[in-house]
Length: 146
View (cartoon, rainbow, N blue to C red):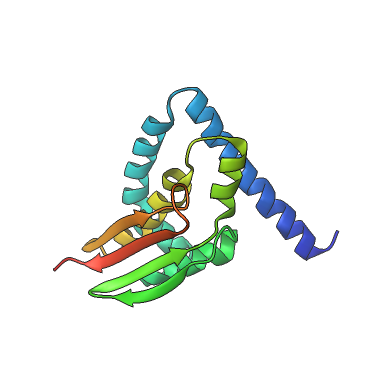
C-alpha cells in the first residue's frame, strides 16, 4: 500500500473512531456532559495546543487543522473587526449523519478550535453562525471585542 492510500485509510479510520465515540456517548446519555467538560479543558489548554501545532495566528487554526486532519476545507474571508471561516463539506459530519449519531461538531471540531483561538488571543469572540449538521455550510465568525 502506498503512502497516499495509507494516509487516506488512516483519515477514514480516525473519522469513524470519532463518530463511534459520539454514538456511544449519545447512547449512554452522557454526550452533553462530555462536551461541556471537554470544552472547559479545551479552553484552558487552547494556547498549548496551538503551540503544539505551530499556530500563531487565529485564522491559521482553520488552515492547519484542515491540512492535518483533512476533514474539511475552510475558506477564510475578512469581515468587520475580524474574519469568517466557511466550509461546505465535512467528512466527520457526513459520516455521523450516515451512522445516525448526534452531532460531532462541538466536541471534535468547534470547541477545540475555539480553545486554540482564545488561547492565542483571549479577547476574540468565537461565534458559530451555522453548522453543516443543520445547514448547507458551516460558518464561524472570529471578531475582536468592540
